[in-house]
Image 1 (spheres, helix red, strand yellow):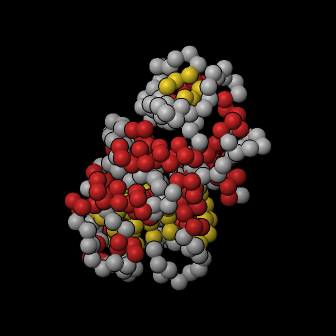
Image 2 (cartoon, protein in one colour; image 1 turned 180 degrees about the horizontal axis):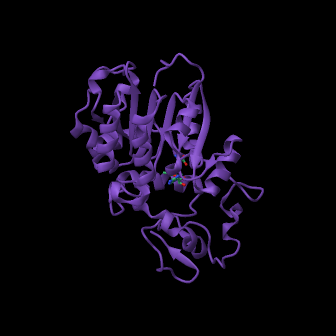
Image 3 (tube, rainbow, N blue to C red; image 1 turned 135 degrees about the horizontal axis):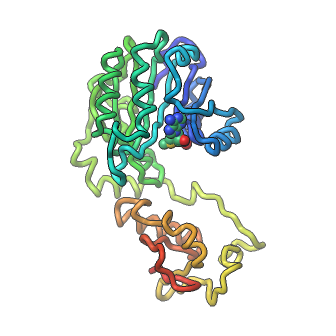
Length: 321
Ligand SMILES: C[S@@+](CC[C@H](N)C(=O)[O-])C[C@H]1O[C@@H](n2cnc3c(N)ncnc32)[C@H](O)[C@@H]1O
């Protein structure tokens, strides 16, 4: 969003602030903005947010806010990342009839009542939101209240980050503000081109959905180890210094290079196995292999994620591949 609001810094409200991912993005984008309030119901998330930003969000149900409360902040921009469970493809996809959608619907219903509506809105959610009835309500309310919108499904891979995580994003500006490339208003785009000032969508939808496109992006990404911090527990940074083996009666904790067999302590898998489920990590098998290969180099052969391995472990060690 280019700097069109005359008032600087922007006054920003962050709804569903969690641990502050959107605030962090705002900082990274170097927008001249101040988060005047953040809202989240979860006290642990608020602890983390406070640790990260030195500001404790308003702790309570967003559903209890009214138009006067929101007008009181006189905000230029709203950032909203409402709960994704009503829309995720891994869930029941109940949309607006899911109770977890209520607070977002309530906030949207307040928009027509505002005396000082924001000039900008940014909404983030999972893929699946764009086909939901909540999405239909969002765009309807925005349109009726003088906002223009551009919508995207984008993944960090498209920005050179080695992480395949497509997400839905909606940018909205209140007229007379407008987008640099208005041809893309009211469309769902799968390329960041228009955000980068490109005047035409050079890529066809089919191409953007093709595995080749995603493979190419993956190859162009910065390596995973650019984003990781090594932690050694001994003097040497070699495989024997990683202490998570300490409590396991491990016969051999070295990778068997000949057979490419890797082992991981059962305690680790029992604790983190479901989080390591590759189906949630990356969508394409090739991407997955590249990711594992890189990870393997980084971790010097210590673990490889498995499929859903819960409840299926030998006593002490599990052979993974
Ligand atoms: C998808 S997460 C947002 C993540 C956030 N963008 C971040 O960077 O961590 C949704 C957040 O909304 C909060 N939440 C859900 N329903 C809420 C409600 N009715 N009122 C306030 N916060 C709510 C949850 O506690 C959770 O932190």
